[in-house]
Image (tube, rainbow, N blue to C red):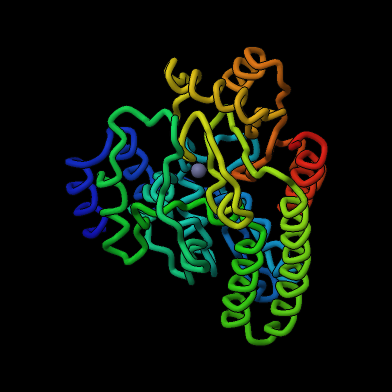
Length: 341
Ligand SMILES: [Zn+2]
């Protein structure tokens, strides 16, 4: 309890009242003052894995098969950058055997969780599984006002050695080749935690990774056959790893993470001009977007719009229909074949 009170005192200086309340609520839960929904006890020593976002959940689910239980914290349909964790989320993270999260600076809600409770089990950060790329801003992109990466995020969690990487782009899963590497890393981590089932986890992870590598080859073959590799997003652009993998020239209204939806006139003018001079046939937008900017540019240039699913999160309907990272990226490939050139 002493540690938690110290944490609160420190938090008072740095965090919003909302977060302090959440923290207090969590302490009450941990102290047993409020009846909490206990997470189910593991059956027959099954591992409990908690993942923050859909890609982490999907890779873990593929690696465990039928052998362990995977929970996704971010509810379907919720925008991944603005989620507020519940006390139950904090408890789930603290008590699971393996916590998988991204490790980037945009998911500040994960910092809130790690500040409130240190996980008792193993922790895997997706950003540690692959080579990282520095954040990049394409020409013409509208930057967030006051956006500064030397900001307050990450300090609290850094004390646990779990802090966010800064200055690097965190959307590592958007390249299927990276997705394969992360899946293999999850398989290895699971094997280390549960010796009896080690070979099952490794085999499952390998077979999903092979599917992802095959998908990677198909994307590469598709782009190899294109005379031009310029892609325009009238939206946020969290696809740096995808673009880097297939050597795409990209232009977009906003950087990968952020909340802006109003581009400047200069950004719209720049993208419109780009579309005209390079004869780009399609303006892309991402999932959960109102695609107003894409619509506006498409209208001004007599082009069409299409969706590229970046897999940050899925809708309830997508979840219920059993989509996977692999199936969503397959759909992206189909959309590219139809609309890219
Ligand atoms: Zn993001």
